[in-house]
Length: 296
Image (cartoon, rainbow, N blue to C red; front, side, top):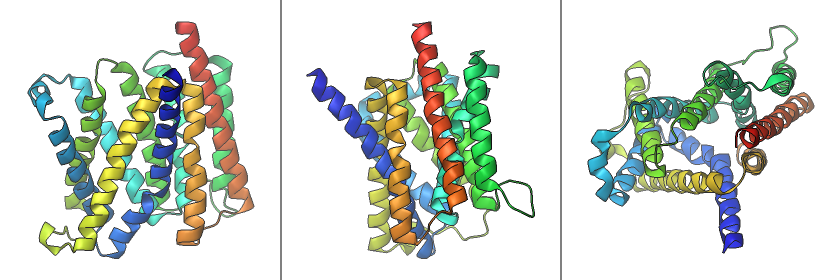
């Protein structure tokens, strides 16, 4: 029985990683159809939230008793997911994902100042390796090593948002899987709705969508729901170190998908910098795992 749970947990993490490794493609199809990333995010997460409300109908009465941390989680996760979608739509997929994977660096910094967690010299190693990897990947001969366009800045901010989401989640052990999932979905809806007035693209009303548009958005919503639940389940069953390493499968899926679907390929320098970021992410997971072991 335990082996079956373990295999399901590993499958859940691999499925979630694969889903996030390819989800950029249907979002790009929506943009090619004239529907902006903000609009398609609002619609897809609305579908996910509606399905979630139907699934969790008997838990509605508890919504009015939500703690303040649920709203902060919704805001942080909403920003994280929306900026990630906007970044992968307009940017080079692998560069965007590697900038996002700087999140362990931001998690260590936030945990140090907010949760008062001391990671010591090991945390400093993670920070240094992450920054060297980012410097190599972002290096430009005629400019400072920094994100080169809006998509890459959004990816960087998404990674910071993800780190903030992780820290809030760590402080919110009292929240159930249902509450966390709904917080994420409604958070994206709220942030996307607040962003609409600042976007130049017109916001499409439901009647302009074709059947193909609805099918793509429905597929994205189902992927989002399945990934959310399966990843949450996997994280509860598998130690942080192993879960983080398994989830790096997302980068493999994204590299293959972006090569074949978008004709994108990274340079040797980008691979080198990206490899250091991945090494830092794995080492950060080990640091976090050892901290939890000592705390236990």
